[in-house]
Amino acid sequence: MFEILRFYIVYLALLSGITGLISLHKLPGKRGKFLVVLIWFSALTEIVGYHFTEWTGVLNYYVFNFYMFVTFCSYILLIRSLLIKINYKGTAALCLVLFVFSFILNILYCKEDINHSFIYSFAIGVLIVMILSCLYLIEIFNSDKILNFKKSVFFWYILGILVFHVPVLPFMLAIKWFLIKQDESVFSLVLFILNFLMHGCFIIGFLWSEKKYNY
Image (cartoon, rainbow, N blue to C red; front, side, top):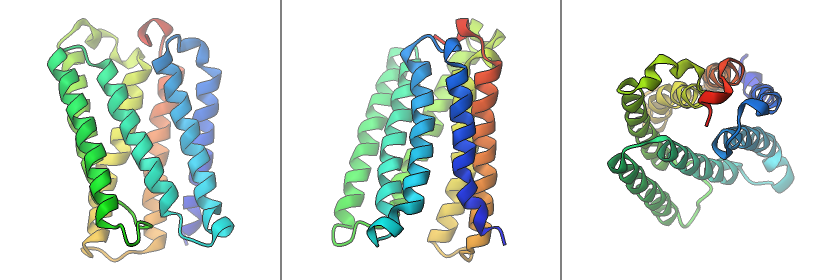
């Protein structure tokens, strides 16, 4: 019943991507513009992923594993650039190495057939993003930025990726470990709702943020 919802996710990405383009005047630095690039990369991945099997005759795990690798590396680098304390930045750098290492191990583990979902690399990526996001929020709440944190596009972007990834991780692991039955209808509904919330945060960030807080 809800299977088709999964294929509407691309429209959510396009909507937030277009909003980002309209709001480029509020994004003076490279970091802000990088957010828009990531969103459009997400939209492109959804389109390619949808047609990949049709074009190649193989499952589209290659596409989404590559997407996962690029996006988590990007998330880590983005949050690292937002952190102020040197030790926090060092932690982020170590986390990046850990994630890349886990991804390589995942490839080696599945070397006979790597066209599978790299769920454990995904789990490590989510945990890393959660930890680094907490460090980012701690810095905000312990500084003058607390007064205007809602006016920063970066706050809303990080909130968006947390809103999506934190709930989806246990859901994906439950399917992986057969704790719940994989139902394509439920899977599509969950992905659509979480993407709706995530892109909603992105759009709010683009519309609500102010230029002077987006450097």
